[in-house]
Image (cartoon, rainbow, N blue to C red; front, side, top):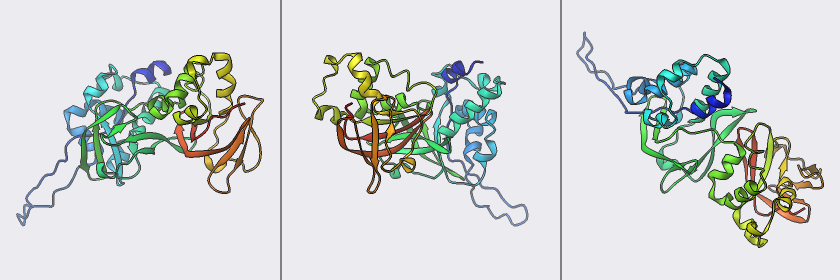
Length: 310
């Protein structure tokens, strides 16, 4: 199976089901033992609704991890969620290509957090998953009231207890996001997305690479009276490329005072990291990073409050 086809078909992960306990008699004392919660893996393995998920965990070699000690949070797709991708347990069991198995493992890990977070503890924002790129957890977007994952996936059942964490059952498989996906999934970037599509740059930030994108929110475009309909591709391209670097630079790697060249070679960004992260570039000054280090599969996104004008 080719990698791109695998990505389209086998976007897996999660773990879910029912908190299961049992009591048994001690043959010598006839004293009931203390009920024991099942591990995340065992819950998936024992419930027929999660046979596809269990197959994914096993094919990815994560049974021990998800059976062991720890405090995980897992967003768990059911068989019905996998079926929306045309994916079954049999299809997963048939995978033999090592690259496809590794990708499957990454997708499974993308459904998991390294700490236990109950539904009452969820808050709006981004959290790092256990799927890492260059040592950094690829971000999951959390929304509340109602709870949404990556702005489109619903939690059908929350707070299913396991011996090693908690499970939230979801109605779709979570797909690890590219930079373009992060922009699409966040309504605060709708103007940016429209501009990327019109400039035909959405594919660039959807593809392979290690980019850094400073992403202006919608209000930033409103503040400069930006009219997407009146702006053509030729005018958009130098603006948008001024917001991107060709390498991944997280907030703790941003150089203080040293100009950094953008994909628009005529524009460099100069940063002041003495109090938060502020910078200037082109004709624009006093730009603030509002949210840093949203990790994608192909780079990192920093949310900013102004549009960088060349």
